[in-house]
Length: 413
Image (cartoon, rainbow, N blue to C red; front, top):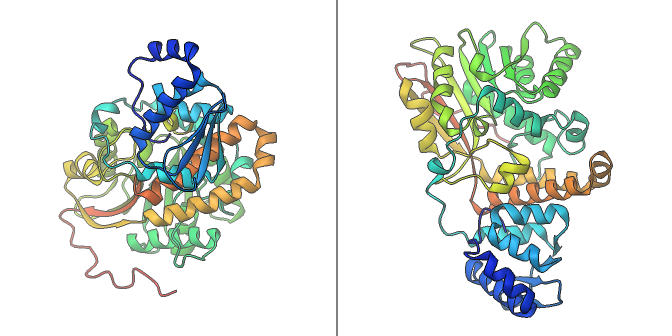
């Protein structure tokens, strides 16, 4: 149902033949297969012919409705892709708590696919990167305004307390990043992948930094430049519509928040080369903020097709080996904000649902269902530990301009 939880049907043609002769039998066989793969999950499955069976004893947390038996076979054949496809189209529906269902399914995942490197070897060329960004981030600023915070920050927030508002938590995240970087007035910062510009503007306005921010999303760059003009920060912030690979110049600080996931594993060495040439010899520091995993695994097929083409959440080891080690960049600090991203997604999902009718008018019901599944599945993945959110602070290996303690990093709330 999510993240390739079900193994594929080995002989779908023979299953289809049984489907025509014995619809009741195929339904029981299919549900038995789901039960073997998922285990004792408190979920009920209802098929088109009226057959309804529970996967475990007790009260089900949700009922999965399959509109026809061929959809059932399609999902069994390739669950990682086709559950999402069928949910988007309405051929599969869920009665009850979708988040609880997805969380229960994630809870059955005992091991990760260790073939992440082999299964995701495609390079993100310049043209592919532009296509991937356009697919997701250029859906229109009006769409994202419906459910993001006031500043359109589309990355994990930092909640000083669980009851902090989303807007306050996003400001707290930007402050946390700036404090980890120990930003000083007048320092030069380059940002790879700047979204709608909130962090770049924050570093310039609140910390007096001079920021050059790169992004290949035309919609986001247009908004960021407009904000800079409105705040009178054009002299301290430059928004460049270009790929990170074309970054030039040297800077005191390199920062990337929410972009490493889109670089692609084969291009990590290139990303590391950009960091290396951007920071002066003997000094310079940086921060990488990214969605990751504890062990390598391929991206969910449906997410890769419909939501984030070309994306790959790396492990810390992959980032260390691919990005940092070749240029002797020292890791100074690692923090995992996994539960903060789950809380962020909770806010996004609730806001999205409140705006669902407006989103449906902007796009269609298939789009609404797809994004509902994406936001719910992502929250479930962070709650279950299938996904992590890492912040890695680094510096030149030979630099002694590093903090003596962590004192002052976290402010009392």
